Length: 488
Image (cartoon, rainbow, N blue to C red; front, side):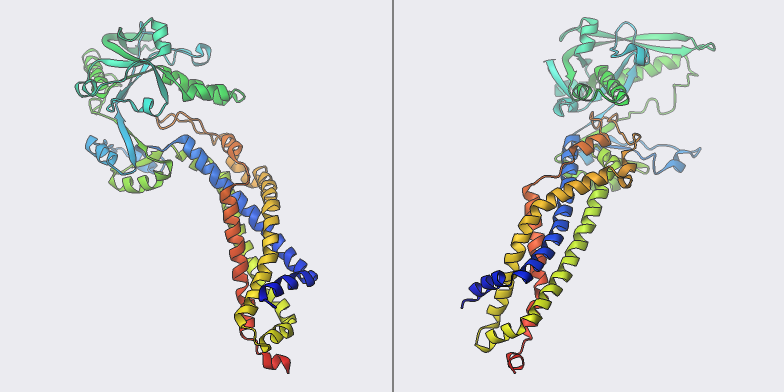
């Protein structure tokens, strides 16, 4: 009889042993399948959330890891050089980049926008002047704002530092402005009396020709989505108001405005606390848009050695790294369980099959004594194991997925992972890298255990690989069989 037919007959005739082996593989298969389902789901959450956050990076002072340095009396910050920013921008991981000069301008006649005057009061009176060295404007390219009228800068505008700018549609509506109009920023300087009253020191007018009008996109969308959490809404309103009151200008224009303001302040009030030695220095914040969020770590490793002391690379995906603790813990736990389950499966299946082989040594000895090849006998055992394990693995593929869903829900609701759900663990993109507010609830809602091609392929490879490895010990037993001794 062909060894393949013998294998089929052996499985059906020896139902008891087949059921025992099936039960062992089915139980262990459920553990492996559930763990792989959890691990795959946590990895999918990380990928999807990081894709949502985008691959953006900037260079900032690392206050967190250099607190002692910043408290020294003779401490002095080394400013980032433009040449270094450009060199980093040539990295193969960078899609495009910009470096921004940013300053604030308090105005009175030019009205700023307030979304909730009672909540924020007059604290947001005035504008953020955001310079750009990238004529297409990075926020437009990244769809943080949408150009609704006019155009972006030309390279000539950037190179010559022309007094041209983009304003939000709300600011345009508030002040009756449109594309082509000349807007006058009445930048004012204030001081405070001993009684706490505000006193105007001087005013300087800066004419700006409006070349474009924009509307925020991401912040407004998030505002509509999250109306349950009052604290989140306040943060989102602050972001919206900050974006609406941003005026985009060429870098040279911002620096010139800041220079003129400082010089006038020196004449009017040379002892002003707002004047410092580095107030005239050119200070830029670089922003790098990477080709993929997956390039963040490689970009950090490449860039960090180039930076001056006390600086570090911050990325938009750091939000996930800081508050995605629950997913990381679940991924680690599931990874450990997979390893333990595979090792246990190898040992248990090897021992069970080996015991069955010892009971069948006379049967196997007869095959060999009749001239059957050892490879055929070994092939018969492998086919028997593959038939039983194949059925067990397919069934555990389905039940293990449900098991993974139940276990992960229990873990997410348990004290084991609750430290990651602290309301304080909420970050908001106020560093220019992301206008997306990420909370632990966002991460939890993105988590879902489901059937996927990656889950099925990974489980089949791990399951069948484990079964085949478990067959090595029984096959070695067959190799050592001596049919003469068995038949005597």
